[in-house]
Image (cartoon, rainbow, N blue to C red; front, top):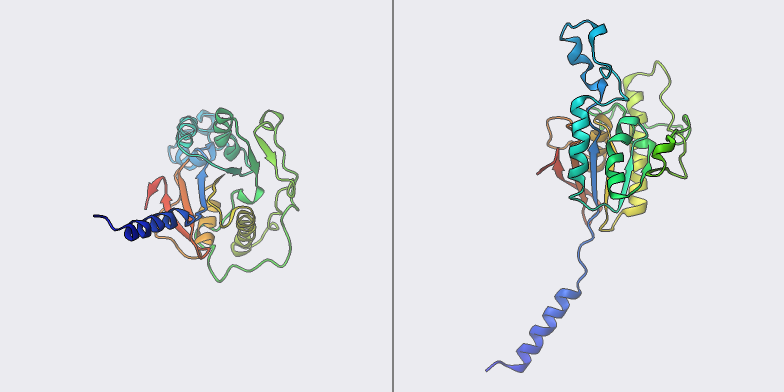
Length: 255
């Protein structure tokens, strides 16, 4: 015979288990743009083919290669397996036009974040040789131009309709990286102010060097990765209870 007291105790345990809130785990996904003409310029230079015979896309950062066009189609399909609560993308053409077909297919919009534009720092971003900027650069660059046919899906962030200021011409590499670091840390600040401690999933769309730099700054250490991001490759980090981040996906592969 079952003891009524034991059954009552068991019922209380079950009730408590279901009443304990689940861990709120913010997930940050980051996807690199599809292959652009600038990505294959070196390859064509090595072919010893006269430049007059190169396809028009070679060397052009505002045009996808034939492979890049296929990557955009594949990425549009891939992303539909996810549900994102927020999307932001770099202000640069190749990033905007990598995510646009997905936004249109799913009737979503993305904020344009100039902090996600490409910049140096992939290798040295955590180096002690990188100085802290003593000036402000956010929203002090050129105005961001979103073409009319993209405005239905891409919106400028109200507090930053301008790009961030570039390093002065002739700056050494460490100072250039300092600008990337400052912008990336500002992006992290925005993310944590809006979504830190929640169970939201957000997608950022940008570039290779700045994307790996952002990842390293989020982790606060060198991750166990040996290469950069593939075209349309993604990484994902999940925020832990103590506010730190754990790398769970890199180049679409679970770690």
